[in-house]
Length: 362
Ligand SMILES: O=C(O)CCC(=O)c1ccccc1C(=O)O
Ligand SMILES: [Mg+2]
Image 1 (cartoon, protein in one colour):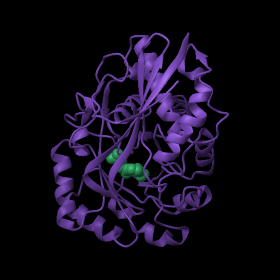
Image 2 (tube, helix red, strand yellow; image 1 turned 60 degrees about the vertical axis):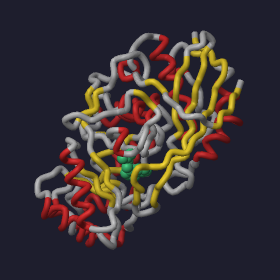
Image 3 (tube, rainbow, N blue to C red; image 1 turned 180 degrees about the horizontal axis):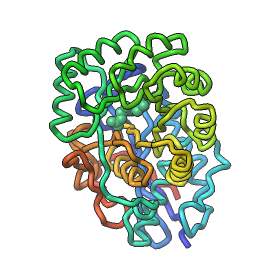
Image 4 (cartoon, rainbow, N blue to C red; image 1 turned 120 degrees about the vertical axis):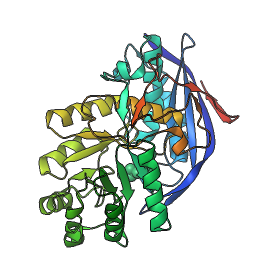
């Protein structure tokens, strides 16, 4: 039986090595919370809030995560006793999936350490090797973009994901395909289009993209289905997918052919595993999207990506693509296009935090 004694919230700002620009915003810094969860025996599990400081991607922000943790999640969790992380009861709190993940991830880490197994094994993962791709934000010039892509390919990344928006998409694809005719390539629109752009989006078909991620608004399941019917490029839903019910809706309407699962978007491992299993049963490949995570969130996302239906390269790559110095040792590394997760119990990396603001909840 596991019960929870206290949680320490470490909050810190981490400047990104390079600004990450997409169709909605430019991210230069992350404001993260590391959750340090203690059980009755003093065993510690870690989680991370991967929310941004503004609600451009989902409704949550780092401040809402902190608020939910202090005022709703911790009071609920400290009363619970569990044998297994799937017994955790969080459903009386609606949504707030990133806040839930910051705690649920820590519970799984703690459980894996208690049972002396790597986190990826505790969730049912079948390998510790994860193929990874590189996501590249908008650059100021074509030359810079080509240079960034060339660098990522030299470092072994197995596919390139480009951000797009209506103003520059076809030009970018033409330029990139001229330089890299056969590189596995995909694009992410972060909802920059509407259903009126069908004819425009059809023009991407000749570029042989692996997929177009989230072309339309996050609640547009019907319009995504109309669009998928008209274009050859497979649609992948990202911002649309928060729950198993979202996945069921998307699959039954044929709104997409691929799904991006992010641990934090779906509220943690237990939900992510259910979504993974459902997609597998319905022959929908999944892959692990990234949130510009610091080390704890990165290691947990990659652990999720060891489940067998994660058949496409993941976003979260080497720590040094994002950070001057990550908060874990060793840092996450990519070799020959793969991350190899440590076989130590739990997430397998040690936390190495600079001095931070701390709040202790008991
Ligand atoms: O490399 C990464 O971590 C992912 C890059 C990325 O595309 C992204 C980063 C932050 C928030 C949302 C997204 C996205 O997939 O839409
Ligand atoms: Mg995306």
